[in-house]
Length: 189
Picture: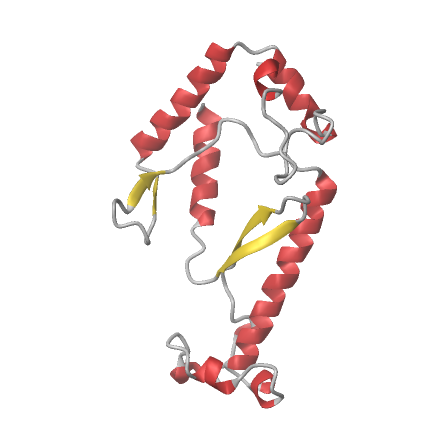
C-alpha cells in the first residue's frame, strides 16, 4: 500500500497534504503510512466498498443547487482520515472561533444599536437593502448577546500551505449532520 501513496506526483502549484517538496511524508502522517504499509490493497478496497455501500444504504446525499443535471449526489467519504498536527488544528480552531465571534457581534450590532452603520463601517444600503435583512428583528434583545446560534466554515488549503476561508455557513451548517454520519459509517467500516 505504501508504494501507492508515494506515486502522487509533486506539483509546485498545489499543496501536497501527504508529502513535502522532497517527496517525504509530513511527520504527522508517518504513523498512518506505517500502518498502511502492512495492509494489502484488497483490504483497502474492501473498506472503501463497505463505506460506499453504507453511504448508499443510509441514503446520505448532498445537493448541488447550481447543477440542473442532478441535485442529489451520493456523499463522498474517504476511507483515510485527514490528519493535521495538533498545532495546526489549534490555529484553525482559534481562527474559526474568532471569525464566529466577529460575525455574532456584527449580527448583534446590525439588529441592535447599528453602530457599525452609524460609524460608516457598513453602508446602510448594504444592510437595509439586503433581501435577507429582517426588519421586524431590529431591537430584538439577544440572550447573552448571542445572535449567531450555528456556524460552520468551509476552508481550503492554498498552494503555499496556508488556509483560506471559502465560505461561511450561518443559515444551514449542514456539516454537523455529515460529521455525525461520517463517524457512524467509519466506525463500522
